[in-house]
Length: 212
Length: 114
Image 1: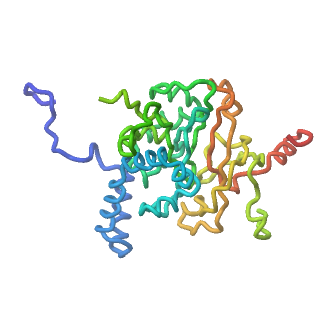
Image 2: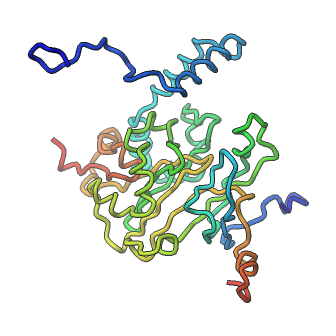
Image 3: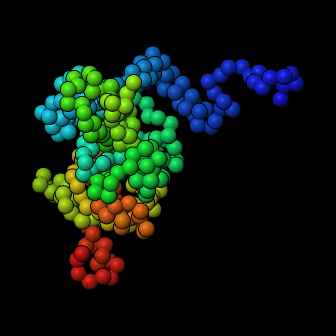
């Protein structure tokens, strides 16, 4: 504690809090070894970080909005996401396969990775912190309606809730239900209604009337 | 595994009733513990992928393993489940973690097939 009369501490500004963990040390050691051996360069690492961070939910929102206005595109997207996206110049990459599912009045999908934090990064970018939390991962599989309620979604008994646990090589993108009252909106206006959470299944697309 | 010919590449077809093996895993594994020993239905074949249990130990992950989408009934999975009757959960399970549901029932000493 400082003795003078304000409550901030005087620690230097740093990205990291606390001592370096064992795994951070391990990561640094392996990374430096691989660079030394010439398997990749620091520039490659930065390029990959930039590529990952360049993907954000806006890309998913554009896909959803297009699927809403173009049933043929939606069918292709669900049937063969890799090819459909590839034709648009969007690479799914080699790490996992993408699957696209559609929420309807009768069936609501919600996505989780109970084992770690698998997420459709190729479309939505970096997952939100809560997606990686033990609480979300353990609770949404056994009480999905309770968790959805906490996210603000109350589903009737007549809507089946399907939890998708991304346990292996598939990543899931949810096409949320198109809100009513959006018949006159064009694709770019519709994309504004598609939230990140609605593409995970923990949210719904925004009501156009509810927006400022 | 019955990979005797191209038609027999996959052991299970869509709609097959299966049970997730109730085994312990040594090290890295993509089969969640909450599904081990549980009965489910094959929804689809997701494809053939490298075996994560080998990949994790610097092996090539070969032979490729068939990965299935498997659906489980929430009301069977969780006693006292508070949701609706039709709620379910789907997970991706590798072939070597699956066995026919009938075989599991017979092993358990129950007569006939489910």
